[in-house]
Every structure is written in structure tokens, then in C-alpha cells.
Length: 293
Image (cartoon, rainbow, N blue to C red; front, top):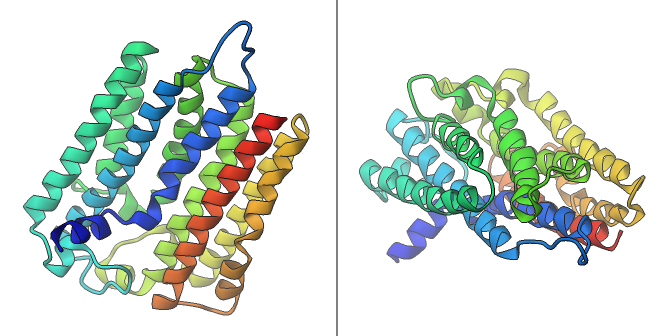
């Protein structure tokens, strides 16, 4: 069915990267307010979730479009791409990306109007980063900076931004938590790029995985999980129950075993699913731990 093709093109397995920072950012806000003096703006958190999901979907469609018109999707071993497979025209996918960006812009404007107009600048930066990841004449995703973008915008910005629109404050707990969130979001991209090393190398797409090679990419995945654990431990120094987040990281063990055994190509597709579930479970347990203190 037509709708199923568009849903698959939105890459549902990547959506935890958009949901996790909002959950954790909201938890940080809830844990740092006193009902006697202030409150959490839950409507703004809902808007933040819509913005985050819309941006993730917009970036996915934008990448599909840009990679498709460049021809870098012809040797893919992962899930189907809309333009590369010929399922949808480049024009239609580009329009879908702009519509998703439009939804994010609309709700982002509402958030800026109710909190701070400085958020408009943050929004512009997010849109530019999303489009030029694979778009434009010199996409930075083709130069190995994709992980940095994901860490900043789907880690630090999304987590602390959610806290800010909820209580109009930037908190240290949110900043530290954003490190864990950002590392797990990066881990998703690392697995994706590890899978695509052969095709990306052939097409000249110099992702970080292509630049550092197969072995170091696998080691980088382990490092990201370790860094997320360290951030959670640091949080626990003031909020002991934050250690609940470590139980979420345990769910990554099957992915670690597959990577240690040399899984490649299509065998890495299940690893993406495991990593996404790890991100969601960690975000949920960490959020609970932050709130109960």
C-alpha cells in the first residue's frame, strides 16, 4: 500500500532517537520543580515531541532524496530507500521532507513564542543541519561529521531544549543526561554506517565509518555505550536512582555480541533494532530514575 511505503521511508527504527531526548528532558524538568513555586508545562513538552519526531522524519526523507539523486543508494543492503528503489519520485520525497520540516517549524514557532524567541535561531540551526547532512554541494555527512551532528542536535539540543521549554531553565542534570542520550543516538548511526561501508566506499561517501574502517567503527560503538554508562553514573552521584538507566544499557548485550562476532551487511539490520530498543529502554529507565531521585 502507498501509506506503508511512506511509513517505511520514514525509517521507524530511527524514531527512538527523536523520542528519547524528549522523555529524558521532560524527566529532568519534572525532577527540578517544586509544586509550590513552579510547574512543568506539559503542553510544551508535547509540542517538543512533535518537533523532534517531525525533524527526524524530515531528515530521513531529506537523506533519502539527496542520496537518491546522487546515486549513492544503488548498492544499499539496508531497508529500501524511496528514491533509490524507484518507489517514489525524487520530487515527491523532497516535498515530503519539506512538509515534515514545516510541521517542525510550526510547533517550534509556538514554543519560541511561549518561551524565548532565541529558540528560532536554534530551530534554523536544526533545519540547516538536517538538510545539509546529505544535501547541498558539500554535505557534511559525506565528510564524516554525521555523528557529531546527531550528538549535538539529537542529544544535547533536544534534551536540554525540552527541559527549557518545560520550565524555562537549562539544568546541569539535563546537560549530563544529554550526553547519554546523544551517545546512544550516535550508536544508531554508527551501526547504520558500519553496515553501509562497502556501498559508501564505492560511491565516495566518506562517512566516519569509511574513514576509520570496520574495526575502529566497531570499537567506536562500544565506546559510545561506555560513555553513556559513564554519564549515567555521574548523574547518580546526586540522584542515585539514575542508575536504573544502566539496566537499559544491558539490553545492548545481544548487539555487542553480534558485532564482536563480525556481523556485517544485512546481518547488522537486527542490530539496528536492538540498538533502538536499548535507546528507548535506557531513556525510560533513566527518566524514571531521575524523577524519583
